[in-house]
Length: 151
Length: 181
Image (tube, rainbow over all chains, first blue to last red; front, top):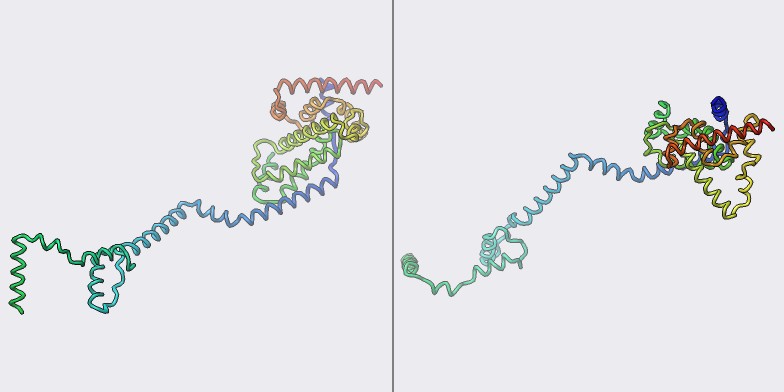
């Protein structure tokens, strides 16, 4: 056991000094690696900033609110906003415009579905005249008499 | 221990000089450890260099749980083991003739590594099988516990203790035989 302790002590005495060449190599490597790390860090800085911002709950909420506002604004202006009233150049245009305005959700394009619908509504419907009952006939006759009386 | 933690903390905070301080603090101990394991100073320096390069690369993620000295010593021992295996492999294939001399246990270079004062001891250490030498040096020189060495080597603690006993016994007999001569 004593010899074992002696061997321990002898082993503890072992010493080798690192050479200047090793010092130079390691220090160069430290400098080079740290420079590379710094370059990579600077390149990733912008991404990191964005990540840092987006990690916050308030930032997420703000972005979500902005998206929602933009979407709703676009949706309202596109679907439910009233189109600008064009200047009436003729009687036909006025009639046409009023017909279009009867459908508030009608898009602005001239060949749209709603405009075609409006024109169709303005067309005379001969079959409707054949379905008069007694009351409507009487009313029509009264109306005819009134108009004739005013004339 | 506290100084080590402070050095690691400074390095993680971006202080470059902390890494140089770590190297300066432990370089001689690590080179001695590697030289005792490999019985070759130039290979030992290569090992220490490789260990520090690896340490630099992963130091930002490094979190010190034990002692920094123990960690670096284990790294050096692992690296030295790999180097020794590679050397043995090259020798077995007969690729490198020059390494035959350095692998020889009676290599005179091994004796002069640690100076004339420890001539007998260094000669005896060089004659030990690598596994026994590794355990002996890691336990006696680096002060690592048997449990840590066993975990590092991937063997049981009893195996490590057995290797240590054999190494001590053989070292003792070698030194005594040298003295008798």
